[in-house]
Image (cartoon, rainbow, N blue to C red):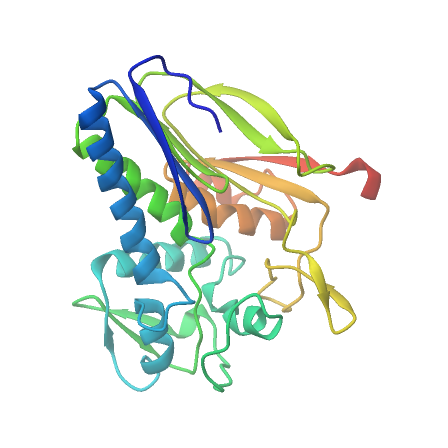
Length: 286
């Protein structure tokens, strides 16, 4: 993703959230922009530390260890993401479900931290007052399908707080652009993921893309992917990518998985979130 806003701009990238996060900011002095970008990366790091499945001290790991036994107090940001995930679960008829983590552990997309055998779904996740979470059944959650978008939103919020006039945050395909300067929007070529395709120019958008470019693999003689149908626990292997425009990156990020599983870029639930989707197919695999 290139930033072409003019001479008063700075762009920085760091490895976070299992991808590279690029922040571009413009419209102020170099000193001010450097500080604002520093603060924005700190916002992303907070989300990473709170919601990483790989970090044994994160909110997600504490929830998975303890919430079936007792209510677990979590950070307001983690609670906000869980609340949004719960809403999306309900409005997509369960197509977006953060409790498919056990399959991702089994297929070695996520590390195994315990020998528990979770048996519930998102209906068994209780969000209690005072930012507490409790499980009605043994459940294992992973926020990897929504937290990256939330981190992008938080970074943009911090840039605006620091008085940045315009810019963008891009975390591995989860993109948010703010301010009055247009920027090119790109997606990977579904037939050749090493190449990118330009969709056009936009400003003031939140946008996310999901596909199986790099996650599809063999596991015990069968093909699996990191996107799982919560209804029958089958891997999603469709040769296409889904991009969603929504009011926030958090919502766009989650909806890409639901739309891919629905197989319909005009899915009725998109209207419930003021969102729209674009589907790109690989014609060689139809």
